[in-house]
Image 1 (cartoon, helix red, strand yellow):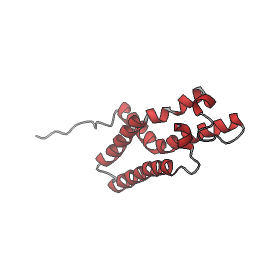
Image 2: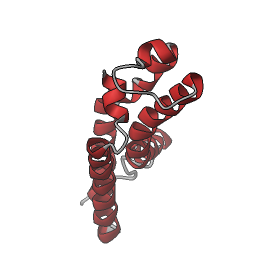
Image 3: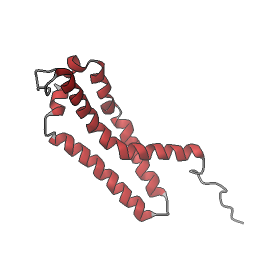
Image 4: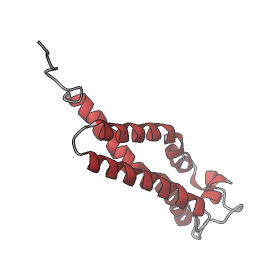
Length: 132
């Protein structure tokens, strides 16, 4: 006599909440990472009264604590990467809706690659200003 499990590992509310948090991080972090750099740059512009200049306007001196707060997304990059991998794997592990899972995994990967490419392109040298 063969028995099946009476529950699914993701039926518990904690598991569902963790998957939801991983999904939010996976979809949102590619916007947060460049947004933090550009928000710091805009705050420095408001404080200085002109666009921050490379090598002249030091972000640490201009922004103070806000400079260190804008570094938080960089420090959280490994956690966000792990959450994204968990989000994609949780979608692909479900036997239902395989096409939707693959599509969302491709879209998430595209968002991450797009955010990294945007930061590499950096049209107004915000990253170079922030790093100097």
